[in-house]
Amino acid sequence: MTVGLASSIVAEDHAFLWHPFTQQQGWEEEEPLVIERAEGRHLVDDRGRAYLDGVSSLWCNVHGHRHPTIDRAVREQLDRVAHSTMLGLTHEPGVRLARRLVELAPPGLSRVFYSDSGSTATEIAIKMAFQHFQQRGGPDARRTRFVTLRD
Image (cartoon, rainbow, N blue to C red):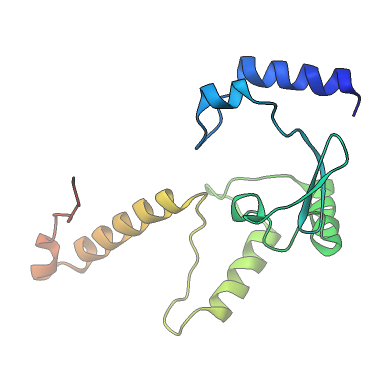
């Protein structure tokens, strides 16, 4: 990356981005690291300096960056379809992954519901538990309250 391009990226970053878990004023006052590429467990900046990615880019790359097997599988899938909803549809990769997850899960867990985040997964689990008790009927159907924590 050229010095001019890196300067342009920093200027646009300051103009258009709000970084999570970052004091914005401090971020804008210091020269940021501009990551250009990644390899294995390292991030490499625009000056060619390598940094250990100790948090796996927030745990999204637990197998490292640019893992050949993972990259190949992603490319093959992108050649077919990048994303398709499961709303009334199905697709082979989703079915195969669900089957494998059920095989790995404890006995009695026989279905998979895909979610995009932990908070959404928690919300879905609460709604599923509520629906379970409503459909079961009897005294359990009266379970309509949720326990919450507050400051």
